[in-house]
Image (tube, rainbow, N blue to C red; front, side):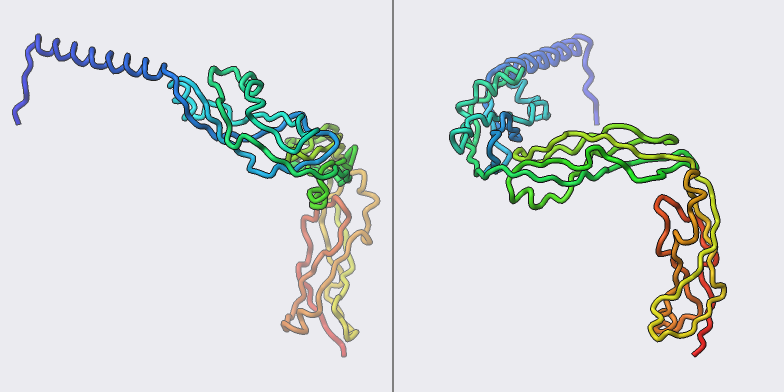
Length: 315
């Protein structure tokens, strides 16, 4: 196919044409995007100035539709998620009635944004609430943590939380479902000393729930651990016919890690080792696996020897 050959003058004219076209389109876009438009944005409802003497349940979704007036540029950026996705609603009016209207609060809501965008209306305009008397409940605090210790170090005693209970205020039907209150995940790495710190409690997921306090002090005892070996007598369980069972061997050697402060006080009676005779009775097992069913807190078993034992039954 033959190619169209343009002279230098024709190429210059074509270049000028496309340059003018691009400038014209750019100017049109600039003026078009500078005009005012109305568009809609979904936003989450966030409450402030909660009523102090009564609990409440919103009777509608926590998402509303905002009718916004702004420039074409703002519309473009809104589609790119640059617009704040939250609208704050003042609940002070709930002290005397069971609903609030956005139309009464549009001025203050718009003032809370630094943008030139203006919220013209909200759908729905009215939010209704169901009220109940506030109730109070104390529940234990549950620590959520992600700890990583230096080699041969570990937690050596129970975690201490101060306070260890949190006071929760809200509707009775919500409080009935709350059995404990989690903290934010406490993260610490390369630990080799006792932890003394503070951790925040998780924020309530509902606006009508209040907790106190908002954080707790934590103490996690940490020590160096060392290896210790004990020989634990093996007990026979599920010997309902009281058979004379001889185990070979009759003790199991356990190798475990224990904190230095507990080394001298950990003895055989801190552990239980058992074999289950039902494995022979119902499964015809010719060896019985050893199970460690009890161990001292904050010890870590590394090995058991043997894993299975032979047995003889004398009727």
